[in-house]
Length: 325
Ligand code: UDP
Image (cartoon, rainbow, N blue to C red; front, side):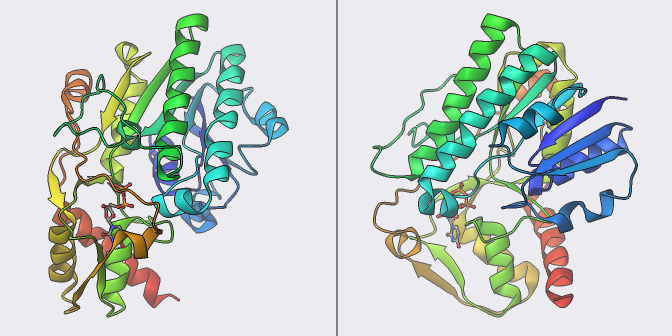
């Protein structure tokens, strides 16, 4: 049994991770300020004596210095999330994603914790390669377009984590997530799957941005947290960066059609220009497909659940949520 700190523990991925860690017999400390995380995500865990919930911000260094000592492993998931939030609040993105990570990693150097750093496929920026490998170049747009602040801020986190690994022997594993989906994900911050599902269930048109030809790979959150935990158990993962997700591409238009078919809601698709959705400064990434070779070689498996199965679960969860409102 280990004592695991999950920053962002009331968030979408963090709460699923906490659930799985508990099922494996560990203790968890959940740190979350409930800004984008939700108490409802962890309510069912709070009665467990192995769970400690600390409500507060990752940007509070005093709180961090209080929660880190005594833990064995740190899963760092607290971050500014979602394209919409990042576009609307660029200063908050940088402040949440950079300085607190530095503070946390420094504490882990002193405390000897193993650290999982949750990074993102956004670090590849708009690299034109069809399939992205961990060693590929990071290709960001100009600093006048706030979207790139997100990927850049996470890239700084990665640099820092790798530097502390090299200089101080910090045992860190870095995971770059590719479009993780599942129950508990909300659409307020721009994420496409919960938005489409909620729109369909409400009988509204599905808002496909641009021509819907942009491509993503969607992975089940439960498989993703299994991969995270698996990597943290493998000594050869320390000091390395991993793509984590699915490698099965789906266009956003096709995703909309699947959501309509799976919900059985006969709603139209409305094509919305990016400028209307995110403002004039916005630039999207057209293709985002990971090479999972490194993950497969290290874990022996990769996330493989089919999109329709995951959509069915998201739809069932959303239906239940809407009917309880
Ligand atoms: N998207 C869309 N309609 C929406 C929300 C998102 O067409 O209501 C598109 C978005 O432009 C992007 C894709 O869906 O091309 C995935 O968006 P999301 O924000 O979920 O993830 P990311 O852009 O980080 O891959």
